[in-house]
Length: 573
Length: 50
Image (cartoon, rainbow over all chains, first blue to last red; front, side, top):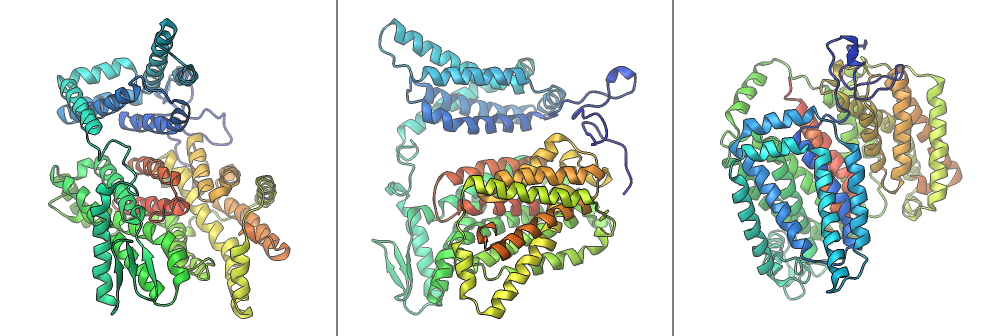
C-alpha cells in the first residue's frame, strides 16, 4: 500500500510531530490550521457530560452540604437539556452553523485548568462548617460562587460564550419554556416518592414489586411450557423445579438491561436522527425496552432449565454472568439492523440511499476484514464462557472461529505488509518484561480456577486444550487484535477514509484511544495492556507494517505462554 | 465518527454499571461485551458506506 496525501491533523513518525496541525500557514499554501480537537457542538457536549461524570465521584464524596445547590443543579441540567432540544428542533440550520463555527474553535485548556482550580476551591469550602453568622453567609456565598464558576469555566472552555449567546438568541423564547418545564420537572421529582432518589433501590422499593412480579410470572409461564412440575413461591420469589430453583431478586428482574436499552436506543436515534422519521421512531424506544425485558425473563428461564438439566455450575457460573450481555448485544444489534429496514420508521433520505446501495453490484466493506476476526473471538468467548462453569473448557472455539474468519478474508490480508524486523521481536520482549514487572507490583492474581479445571480433565483433553490455548495466544489473537487496534482503529480515528490513509499516518489522540481501549479489554491488567498497546502502536507506525505489530504481540504472548507452561504461572492466562 | 463517538459515550454511561455488584448485567464482562457491540455496529454501518 503506497503513501497517500496526508490529511489535516495527522503526523508520521519521521517528521516534526505537530499533531493536529498542518505546516505553518504563513508559507502561503492554502492550508488552514486545524485545532487538535476539532469537535462539533454535540461532541463537545458529550465531552462536557463525561467531564461532569468523572468529577461526580469526588464531588459526592466530599460535598455533604446542600444550601439548595442540589436542586439548582437538577434544574440547571434539565433546563440546559431542554433548551438544546427545543433550540435544535426550532432552528436546525442555526444549530448546524454554530456547530460548524465551534468546530473551528480550539478547546481552551487554560480555562479547563481554571475550572479544576475552582472545583478544588468548591470542594475545599465544603469542609468548612458554617452557621447563621456573617462568616457562615460568606462561606455559603463563596461556596455557591466557586461551584458556579467551575461549571461556567468548563462550559466556556468547550463552547465560547459568544457562540452560546448566538445559539440562545436563535432559539427565541425557547429558554422560557425550557425553564418552566425544568422547574415543573424538579417539583415533580421532589414531590413524587417514586422518583426522589431515596427509594430508587428496587430491592427496598415496593413500588417496583409489580415489575418484579411480571418477570416472575413470565418465567413461571415459560417454565410450564417446558417442565411438568414447577415450583413457584411468590412470597420468597423462588422459582424452578424440585430439582433446581432460583430466587428472582429485584436487581436481576430486568431493570439493568432495560436501562441499558433505554440509553442505547435514545443515543442511537439521536445520533442517526436524519435516518429516522419522527415522531414514529420514538416508538422504538419503549419497544426495545419491552423486548429486552422479555429477553431477561427468557434468560432466567434458560438458566433454570440448564440447572434442571444437570449443569447447575454452568447455570450459576458462566451462563449467569454472560447471558445478560449476550441478550443485550443481540437486542441492540437487532435494533440497529431492523430499524433501518422498516419503512415506517426510516426517513426518505435513508430510503433513497438504500436504493443507491442496492444498485451497486458489490458492497465494499474494508472494516469487516479488520474487525471481524477480533469480533469472532469476543463473540465465541462470550458463548464459551456462558457454557462453562468456573473453567472455560470450550476455549478452542475461540481459535476455530478466529481462524475461520481469517481464512475467509485471506485475499484482503494479502494486500497488507506482513514483513517484520528484529525490532519487533525486541519490542515484544520488552512488553513481556513490562507485563511481568507490573504484575509483580500489583500482586498475585487468582489462578486456582484454571489450574483446578485443567486438573479435572483427562490427559488427552488437557493436552489438546493447552495446544489450542497456546496456538491461539501466539497466532490468532495477535493477528486479530493487531488488525483491529493498530491496523484499523488508529487509522479510522485518524481519518474516516482509513483505507486511503498511509499506515504510517496517525494522530496522538488516535494512538491514545486505541491503546486505552486495548488496555481496558485486559481487565485488572488495564495499565499493562495500555502500555503494551502504546508499544505495539509505535512498532506498527515506525514502518507502517502490520507484520511488525503482529510479531511483537506474538513474541510477548509466546513468552507469556512459556512462563505459564514451564513455570506454572497460570494466573498469566 | 458518529458511531465511534456514540460507542465512547455508551461505554462511559455503561461503566456506571461497574459501581454496583449485580447479577443481571455482569460488570466484569462489560469491556468485552461493549467492544463486541461497538465493533459489530461499526461493521454493519461500514457495509452501507459504499
